[in-house]
Length: 522
Ligand code: AMP
Ligand code: MG
Image (cartoon, rainbow, N blue to C red; front, side):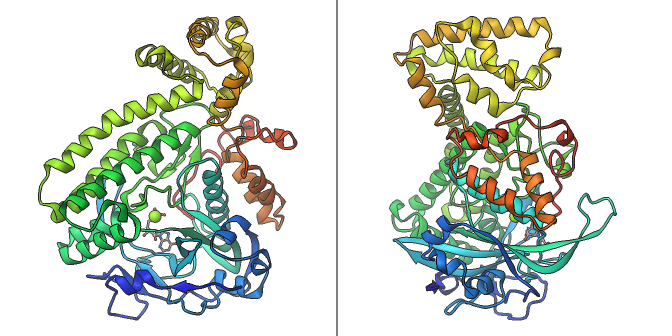
């Protein structure tokens, strides 16, 4: 394995002057050096050949002892000087002070095929940012992060990636539901891969501490490394940076809305400065199309991070980032303008996204489509209707056969036999309008279906699928991990061999922990 690791991040940014791995407040520094904890018996469960290839590791490399040792944290790659990043964040709407990589240890940067990647071990042991926790991760949450981040990538959503999933051979104590029932679980480490793991909170921490020098150094680094097309760092460039982060964040959230992904913990420390989906914790996938749904039991009371609220929270988080960048700009108006624009942009992009899910171009005019889409959203929420199946099957609708519309989508209902007549009537009338609307489109049924299938996935990483893979892996069987990984490489393809995963959530999963209820314990 010929991995060339550089240390651009630590070379160019200010670091912690203290080298002991003790938990503390770290000032005027973007990172602290820290060594991953040795594990007692690492085993590779799965590795992504695609990610390995992107960073220059061959398939033989994946199976080498070196790979096992480096990506479990047992050995340090030559040239690597591992470090944990310092950042802060707003958690559930409140400033939480210093957070930082409490259990993530970065190995450094790899440059391959003109791209820069940071490699990061999640669950590799305590760091100065671990606060009261152990720096470790358990198998269940590691499987969820590993499979979901790769699935998201292949669904076309900007995201961090994952290279490998390993058991550490060590046991980790967890109180899975925060209800006093502690138990040992298998420990695991995921190697995450991303151009950068910098977050909104990386900037907020310096602004909160009025450390404007460090803030500027970090902003300049971010611009030079990742936003160099915006020009050399200066006031206008900081504004342009904020504008582009705003656009990327919104685009990412629109993708989440398109496929029914609910992040679950959109704290500002979990929002990437590159607009990537980051930190897969108590996330979930919509089954029933429900704007009020959140998978995160920690958020059960206020549902701050529910599906329908993700766009608003994106804006709220961007406002925190604007506050953090303000000292570099010293003028509020340009930042406020960008934030004001977010709402219009959201409406435009959200409408375009929904039009694409329905196979509509602008032929009908936005007003007509807004009405049609508004009625659809209302109907989908009246009774439990599976989002993925609904939109995928809608592709089979024939524009000259509105009466046949309901049959096309009836597999999406969780309780079809209990559907009130009034709702069936509303569906009939909706299909009537949809059929009429489609008459204005030049495209024929078959081509429209092909286009719709590019935005309406056939397979997503349903909550119960993750749980089945976890239950099996707990018993030492990794076949389902392989199967899900394979299906989710091509989520828009029919893949008849995997048709059984194109199915509504089974009843046993309705209230099962891990399927409908997840906490931050991981
Ligand atoms: P999260 O909400 O999972 O993104 O985590 C919030 C903060 O808690 C981050 O700073 C994490 O690094 C930290 N954290 C979460 N779990 C652990 C753990 N087991 N040990 C140390 N720090 C943790
Ligand atoms: Mg986090």
